[in-house]
Length: 250
Ligand code: BV8
Image 1 (cartoon, rainbow, N blue to C red):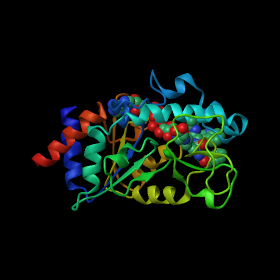
Image 2: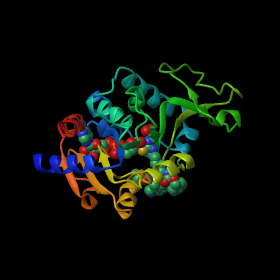
Image 3: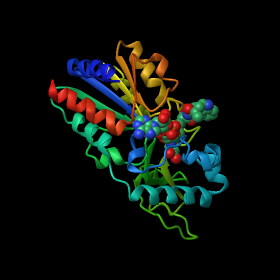
Image 4: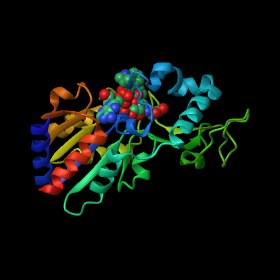
């Protein structure tokens, strides 16, 4: 792995623009369960049972229970070294670094990442499910203990829903446009994602098509590995600080 790390470090040193796409693997070391790992969130639930509009329509209490449980799990989690390195890189004055995340745990924000592009929303926000205009704008919601009166919209008192993007829902057009713009870069890093969920998983290929050097950091092969110029098999919380030290060492 040392050779690949040195190669990637030299690419990063020469880059004027870098984009990093992160997935649940970046938060694993913080204690946030991933989606598809052995102890993954989806293991105990099927995405179509919980993370879809029809699931919420069918049983809002069940879906809110799942999100309240995830909030309780995440509330005690702290950003780890991977989040901290990326946050520092996002403030770098000499290289433009964009962090694009699929994660909804807000740990990149809590680590101080500048200009974060959140493709799938936030576990800690809610919006109106009943479709009132004012309630389309997400608000902070930290409900972790549910009563039989589920979270309500402060504008119309209708039913509130987690402000995340569910399967079958379109992503926010502005977020997609910002991520697409960030795919024009010198180096594109895909870190801690199974590269299964679209459109997020498609940005690496877009970046490659525009001439970016593609690097993957993961514990295992993914569908993105084939189109990566280098795959570094290791934990994000170890590999990113090592890369950072190589960049500082020059
Ligand atoms: C869309 C928010 C247009 C909610 C999430 C049929 C019908 C409808 C749509 C589709 C369809 N077929 C395909 C689609 C498109 C669908 C999709 O991609 N499905 C997949 C399953 C095939 N996409 C959508 O529906 C998207 N919308 O396309 O709109 C549209 C509209 C209508 C009809 C058609 C199309 C919306 C997708 C967003 C879904 N919402 N989350 C919530 O969180 O509750 S997705 C969810 O998965 C999370 O956001 C998560 O981030 C994301 C991806 O998972 P990963 O982050 O990659 O996590 P995972 O556990 O899978 O992998 C972790 C990786 O880390 C592993 O590789 C592991 O090895 C590695 N790892 C672990 N530890 C470490 C590590 N690596 C490094 N270091 C470590 N320490």
